[in-house]
Length: 483
Image 1 (tube, rainbow, N blue to C red):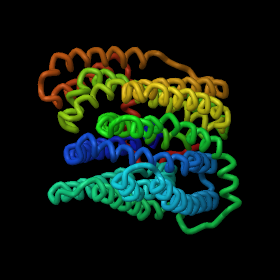
Image 2: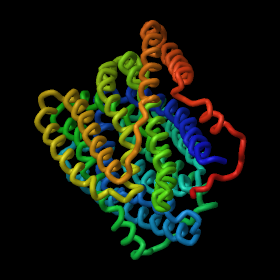
Image 3: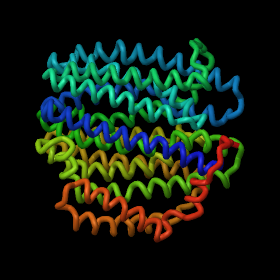
Image 4: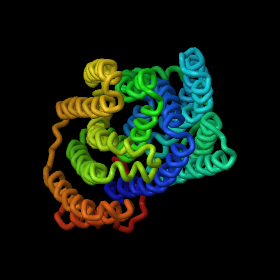
């Protein structure tokens, strides 16, 4: 199986799984928003943002470093066993300490009302289990075996959906719903673990020397993440202190869509990173540049229809998903979709930075952006609320994206070929005409019609090459080499 086909198939499996998972997730959001209302969903968004701060601090860049190390030492089974087991042990230990002890203690000491504190405690499991799951998924990405990851995610979503339907029937409120979400996360990690241990080693391995090496390499990523979370989640937290919970709920619903949409580039980049790391370690710059160019094209192909479609249908989509009480979330989403596009492109370049071990050069960029954006949040959110939060999120992602592009290109000059950029814009414009004509129909009709027009126009104008499709669809069964 060719490398292009391997990447495409594994990404395709994840995207297919994510389509199903997103569909279930949309139903989950709809059930929660209708059951909790803007105030209750605002409380959920606050609890989620609170715990994400600790989850991002916990990361320390180890997930990305794990994938890079496995890619660099592809074929060394002894190293892979040590790497996976050591970081799995470290992740369990840190998760229980930071998320299981420190986060609940801080929550109980916070000025939030008791009901919100209890919601935070109940939701904690939904962060502990995914944190452990990230190491398991890292091993799955290394072996290009992402089918079970997609299945496990959907099983978890189905369990959550079943639980929410029971909660709705029984009239349960915020805290029981948080427990249901945590319980579903446990099933997700359990299924992934059972599958991945067939080809990865997850035994308990207390290995401080390996941890020291990994942390020495990952700390720049971790520090970047720590400052990155300042602008990624501080907006919701500041909103929760200075604006009504109903406004937090409206903003949180739109932000939840953003979080769902940005899983696609991170899935792709997670598969791409070990191959990039391997190519760079072997100084195969031709292969490295080709992978980067193709990856940028992929992100552009995804970005353009999302922006056009959201600008035209944002309010109707959010009304359909969350109910009429959340119609204004569609207007917020029309702003945040620009940040989504920036994240798609930035994901490629940020993973280039990791592959070339240039994370330290990104630290000043993250620090500068974090300080500026948080000051902006503090100055303008009290007055302009969620609108300031949305626009500042866009600005922050654009600034970080520019920084990662500069750092990546200083190390390895990458070529930008505008053909896909212009053809995807042209295809998106044709799609917009069709969507605009059909915008008063049931919202699914313009969405599906627009997607068909976009993909057809993109192929007809050469945005997707026939040779690439033939390579992806070529029926071969051998495993792809990383070297």
